[in-house]
Image (cartoon, rainbow, N blue to C red; front, top):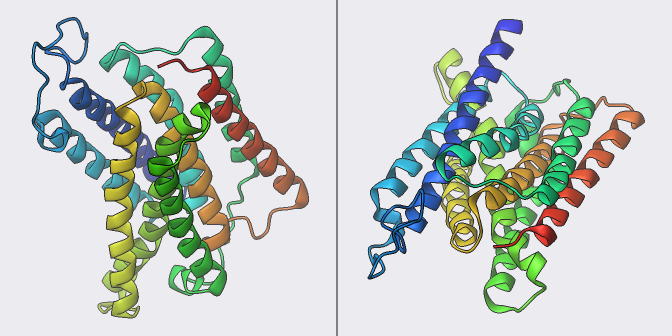
Length: 302
């Protein structure tokens, strides 16, 4: 059991590094529109680069790295609960600060470090509350419960509605800056939620020699998984186009952490045996993280 968990955490660490590099490369591809040297940004182009960002080599490399991170997360799901993956993902915030400083030469201001500390502390508090219990029900049985289905549908309805508001409604600047990176991370968490189900199906099919779930359910899960990847990358880049990479990625990863953990709790019963003290810690951690994310949105200057 220990060896399996060690393998799972190793895969998560590599996935976190890969994901952070991917998001920094996406920002580099954005910078290529205006700069000959996207890292240092010293040589401004006489004419803006007009090729679509999504077909630039740096962006293609970023997609490969993002796919690699998703695959590693997928394999880690075979050994670890989704809530554990969510809270471990919070460590990506620290990893990202180092990666962004190396690749993009970006670093937060002194005032922003307090907000980032609130985010990290909030994540750490939540980590101490997450249960290690595994439900007696299988992932297919858990995900087909009414509460799970309603939660998944609400995720899509709410975040797509938020994207429409961000696109067409004028709102408070600090909330507007949070918008796309936050909903990108929140919807990206669906990738882990669906991935847990798909990982179980693959493992059980390998062990039994046959498909153990309905084909239409598996197709729907794969489709939602693919859509969450495509849409969250699109929303993240909407944020990267306007804001610094370290800021967008911190907001993105915080939302990803919160909604991956919440998905694990609601869909997969990852805290079904946790005492009330654990729930208080979890709520306090989520509140602290949310406060830190909001604070950095008010302090950050583009």
